[in-house]
Length: 631
Image 1 (cartoon, rainbow, N blue to C red):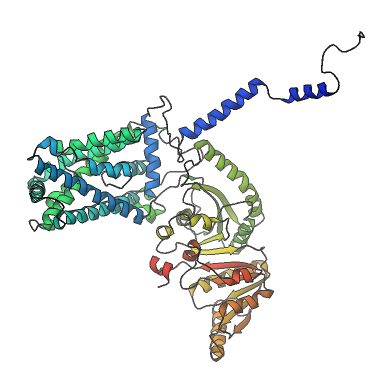
Image 2 (tube, rainbow, N blue to C red):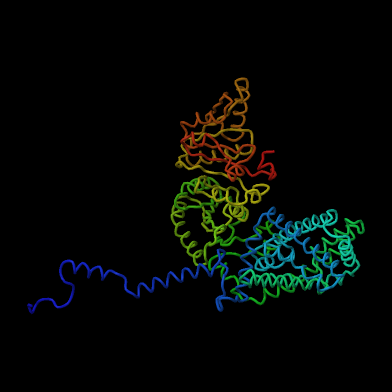
């Protein structure tokens, strides 16, 4: 062997390739590090629910701190306060009817055991178990989660009262139906019926203050059950807690408002009591006592035992999540009734400004929408363009976004919005950008427009836009009775406003399009064509007169006026749109938004024309029924 031959390092040829491969291979430490990171990711996924609320305790895994319990309650309340009235009512209706099971078993066992206090109460909790484990709505259970959200000023007092009223109405309706079934359906024996009458009569004969006091203790028990239930991590624990807690109500001679209403209704149906007397002397004091016990003795006490970090999972720096005092007290009358999960907007601009809200789902692909909004705003004095990136949070998946993920979402959104800000900078308009993260994407459009006092909402239309997310929600309940702002929906095939065609109809939506056309003519020098379709040749002269008058009234007398007497509106629009770059069409009598949400807006002209399309719906006072069904 030569003295200068290498003594270390890889040999030539194949062995060198093996050595290189070995050098590139991860070390044992790297493998362990990757495994640890994967384990941490899995653990984080398990330890956080989709709402960001903790799924295990941070100090002891099988026990939650008071802050963590509060976070879990807030997450549930956040979902509950945004539920539609229909969902709340029918869930409460089922809950009220389930209470009938409690009433029926209680009086039946009283009859079978000769009135034994302990034995007759053994199955009393069954209806409550159905309700709480099954997720039905119960008024006394509702005293905790929504009140906690209201104490945090994330929901307004009117929003809380609306929740209570709907749930209470559903509970009482379900209880009344159950009482009627027991009274007329021969479900219980005559002996049990006698005990049912005695129970209700005893309640009516009990003094007002005594009823209130006993009901307050019952409210304390029920709201306490909710707190303990959110501290439990398995169904068996919840079952035991619910059973023992509600067993204390009959054993302690306490009163529950929904059970009392069912008892009172049964007595009324037997012809032994007037409704007014029963409500005033029995149900009302019990209802007030339950409410006081749940709110004051439990909710407020539990709230103040938590620390300033009680909302750490739902709020992070830069997110504005609290209502103003006026909003908190007056709700939508003063601005907004509810704060979405994440809203990075910093507040309103000054009064008297014309506000255009532009909700977008993808900042990379919706720059034309922003350009159109800025083009319109540039011709308005004191106009503001609010560009809102609405990120939909999944609500039907076992995992949603964890807290750290939501933080990254907002950061990524801000980065994506940088391109949008560059677009807006090219116009002489005031603008701002913000991000909303919520599972209610379609609902947030209306909420943002309302709290920003928007004059105009401009949004995109397409499969990847907010409409597609909206179809997965509850459109019948999320549509408001009347629009708070005018709405434009833009089908983007390139923003070119050089040649604009406006289909003229005798309604407010065409008037909105006339305003848009005027703004485009001033900003882009658009050539305008107005089209009126007559029913037939016999009505052509009438259509011409209407079109001339309409054009003059809207300041568009210098536009090209075209009358088509074919009677086929869509075919006429398609023919005239061959030479235009932008088509303006107003909503029909049935409306625009309802058809977009239900995916029933099928204009053949959308696919038959090659130009961009702008659909308009003016804010009107039409009822929800009229907006949805056109009558």
